[in-house]
Length: 462
Image (cartoon, rainbow, N blue to C red):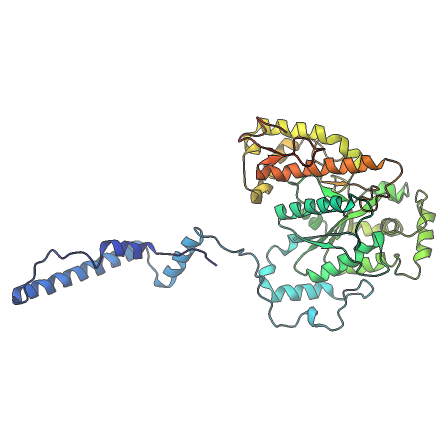
């Protein structure tokens, strides 16, 4: 839809050249035949000259009456504000799809069959969603239904959520926040699986569903998921982990299930059915807890959990690594206690880069932030990835801190968790606020911001 009034150049020109208010230079006398003849002759001459001029213009510009209107519209389309041309959010045809099946259930207990075909059929009836579908991501996160016991818990969760919204806005991802149990028995860490399955059904237009725990945050707002890498090897589930810790060390912390990327396909539906079968909705829930502890000697608590369950499935069937990718080449998610001490050095390194390269510190619209991430990448080749790197960690995960309940792991003090979260949130927030002209000069002070100078950070606070 165009939000401007269009006037064609031809119409504008004709108005200026052939104004009806222009005075005639020919003096006329009604009683004179010669005067009448001169008037008619002059009018005919003007008409001939007008037709000849228009015809000559048409020939010189390859005028096609069938496309002229389209050409004018296209010309002005570049000049006027338009709605998003990518997808049609107002079109849902009456054709039957899987949504019209009375037997369809969103419950984690009810299996879905032929999901690939059903998705494909839905996309066929909604063709505007087909382009780019392979790279479309929906981020899913959530928290408990009730207020937090920790006095600052709700505030922290709000900021964690804001961080995810910021990241999704910058990269064009949809986001869904859930704060109810979609299965009454699937509580605690198991609550994510019913939500992920429901999100798959609710978003057939998306190729990937990305679960991110409520206590995990993005700390590199420019970095984008390398989806083509996972597509190339046809992986369907990506988690942060290490094969050696699964098959040699037999550790339940060999991977972290708090952040995972899962393809919206039938394989994933089947795998989640098997995975969730170890959860509290299963009659064999207690048995699975014992099995997990018998294999993973470092697992201290008796209940079956989602992380131990996923690790156990990989341990028992190594062929699953053909579809499940253990990402260890970058911080797909990273342990906060290792990452937090690196923020100051990372800030200094990135500041040096921007002082050396004016292109990196150029002011720009938030919508084009991804381009500046690409500009920065050549400067980060020597930065490394993961532990010991001075590259911004992609996701910092505050595992064990429990910001809502406050029942943090006793191996560290609560203030260490809360202050660490504030520092990490402001570290990430500075990358966002920068596009709005401000930064936090002190990462431990969330209330104070400073306006950035024109050539920041070449001169100004960091």
